[in-house]
Amino acid sequence: MLIDFSKIFGKSKPSKDVAKERLQLVLIHDRANVSPEFLEMIKGEIIKVIQHYMDIDEGALDIQLTRTKSEDGDRVVPALVANIPIRNVRNAGK
Amino acid sequence: MGEVIVITSGKGGVGKTTTTANIGTGLALAGKKVVLIDTDIGLRNLDVVMGLENRIVYDLVDVVEGVCRVKQALIKDKRYDGLFLLPAAQTRDKTAVSPQQMIDLVNEIKSEFDYIIIDCPAGIEQGFKNAIAGADRAIVVTTPEVSAVRDADRIVGLLEANELRNPKLLINRVRIDMVKRGDMMSIDDIIDILAIDLIGVVPDDEKVVISTNRGEPAVNDEKSLAGQAYRNITKRIQGEDIPIMNLENEDGFLSRFKKLLGFKTT
Image 1 (spheres, rainbow over the protein chains, first blue to last red):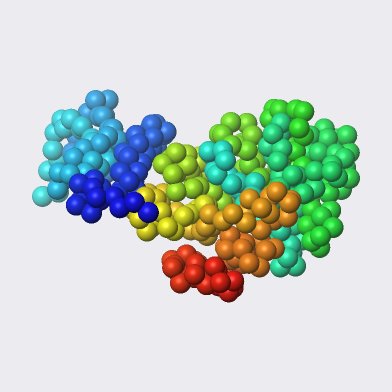
Image 2 (cartoon, each protein chain N blue to C red; image 1 turned 180 degrees about the horizontal axis):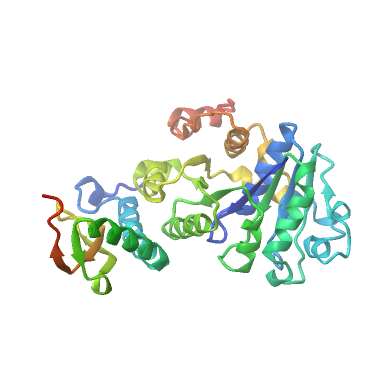
């Protein structure tokens, strides 16, 4: 068996880690693509909850599943990004 | 009432048919009455893997079209008590059968068998829809490769969208030597990504190739490591709590040395 020096000196990471990272990335994309109905469901629920506390512009509400840098900055993680325009905050909670 | 289990994967060539043959034979060896249904119309192979290719008279399409009765199309495996095969048609295509016809078929025979194991074709089109239509639960087969795991993830999503909740994962052709070197994703890596329950791990084993050459499922081979893995999976399907085989010990230097000297290690 040949000795892989680059591995010993830590120059390249194991190929299985590369595989895992590539998979995680491609799956975020695959999973985000499959179900618009799923996002619609989330959207409906979020609207219901938020409407208890504030008046929002339902028509302009936008929810997307996307990717973003993780907090430690060296990974890409899935993120649910919601843009919810608020018309008026209700005072009922006070 | 029998239980209907579909063996699926998305990607081709990961071992669906071999898995179907081994799980079916394993269940029959455990005394269960089992029928294997090949739904890969046009590309049938379960018959050759089972070594029953010379006994086909009628097939799945003949049954759904009413050319013959189900009983006439079932091939009884003379080596294993209680094991039957319903072969796919070879000269038709996937559209020759509909999901509703599959549901009707399994409902017709369900009461007479303990298990109905359905071998699903590769892909996510008509053949896949047919295969999963009558199933109670699903086993998703994958190998530790990026392409196979990706397709498995898609299949899990599609199964759940079709009300087949909680599918189980079978990781096939694991090479523990490569996992140890860091050149193959480990069981944990794959579970981490797919986030579904594991039903078993089958090591890459030459004996599977040899047994397929002969048309005799490896599950019946006492010396085969893959055979042992399939026997364990068979027990888990029946509800037994069997720990996942520790492959680390099986391929260590000592066991290889023992094998060289002719000691039985498994």
